[in-house]
Image (cartoon, rainbow, N blue to C red):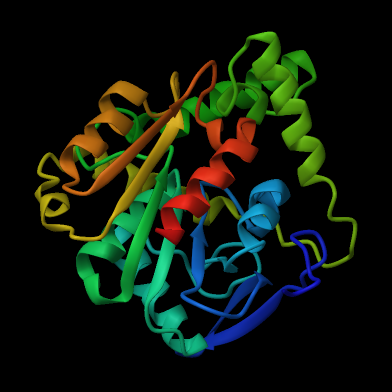
Length: 282
């Protein structure tokens, strides 16, 4: 097993058809790699080290900034089909064939599209805090972000206190612990912040995703899928997003965590890591 951790793994780049894509690797080099795709506005440093290091105990874990995100070059596309193409082009550049995918939030949408457009490249899928096409939530993401930023400014907190976690004492304690873990990377090798142009492209893609009322491609997916979220995701509602997603997928396992929201996998990171490894292992 590599001695590198989520907070010490260097940021590397690989040429993807003339564009540098930033990425990090942690964990063993054996077996099918696990590729992580992150949420709207996120860069590499937004992944929870507890989740990364937990998964890396058994897997080769690869984190990537897609086109235009963080330190990656180019301009972020405004469709999930193009983001899926970029994901596979990145895998080609690394010389990686089949992978497992963990897509969180927006990354979960990208993972769905990759699995539909490139089914031979995906072995198993974990979809966390995400939603099928046509479900309520994604189109309002921009307004939700702005409201959380305003609330955070007024209360002297981080927006993720409100976006990812419940207002309960347990939820806010989990938010504090999560944000403290994100600050553990103290090297000069932190990722670049996301640009407003990239956020705009991501929001455009999310709006189109909600307006797409025919998520019929999911029924054809043969890959085993683990669908997971908190029980009260106020960004993309659990009932119309997570539960609907599990219903549409023919080979889905479902986990819903209590007193938690969009960041449920971070609040219950120990449980999630164990469930994810069990799912990927079997």
